[in-house]
Image (tube, rainbow, N blue to C red; front, side, top):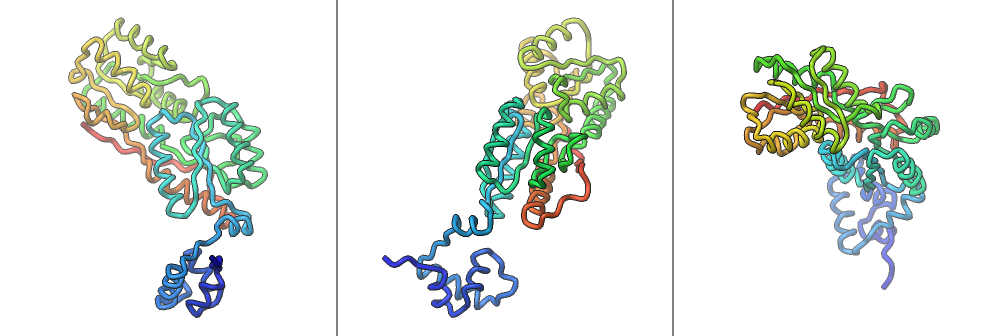
Amino acid sequence: MKKITIKDVAARSGVSVSTVSQYLNGRYNYMSEDTRDRVKSAVEELGYRPNFMARNLKNRSTKTIGIIVSNILHHFAVSITRKIEDYCDEDNYNLIICNADDDPEKEARYIDGLIEKQVDGMIIMPTTANDVLYNRLASRSFPVVFIDRFMENVDIPSFKLDNHHAVEVAFNHLRDKNADKYYYIGTSDEMHITPRVERLIRFEKLAPGHTIITAENDALYDRIETTFRAGEFNGIILANDFAFMAFLEYANKVNLDLDANHLIAIDDIPLASVYRPRISTIAQPVEEIAKNAHSALMHMIEAEVKPDRRVHSYKGKIMER
């Protein structure tokens, strides 16, 4: 069978090859509806299939973006990746998803691997331990944006939750419930990851002298168990989904009365709305963060225009239950 070319489509529809090319790339602004319909009919009748690989090589583009999340187990990481995938699909870009497992060495391998695959840009939720590599990308004007993190010494735009505001809203919610013995439970801040550091700092300013529990994995549960055996409480801020799950594990084990002891979690994981009693949360503006981060990256890729500021922070919303 003869291979159908773009010239065949142009001849069948009675337009130029350039017009067919514009149609195939979704640029309809300068063609009439009749022209668009004729090209569409010719494409369908001839069974034409564009050679996207050849076109992308010619344009020095792979129509591919890489996203590296620090830990795919976090609810936020899953939610933001899902939204970004939607936006990539709308723009006819493919998305390669990488999970760094909070491991800087693994993250570095993914960055090198994505460059080798000639992705057009990257969205990174950085482990924060690869400054040299991040700066190398920035110095080469490689299109890249950060989500959920801000790094002072790296010239890469960041899109994230306003963590100070989130903790303030959570604290005020507990205060309105007449809480006076506050606890903050979160994962370790040893890696100096932006949301962990910013949330903890804000709590310390709002509730100086009150109890702070931070640790990783099983150690976090052990610290919760040890601490709550020793004292009373009536207001708890759970700083992320890992802290949320660790505390509920303890609460279930000892049959803790959560109606009398108020708590609120940052990140609106689905369990919060079905658990009994239902648990109030601060929902991250996932769609807003994803949309703006993706849009900024597209401007960097297609127009070589960088955002006019480095930090873009978005307010969370309280889900009172």
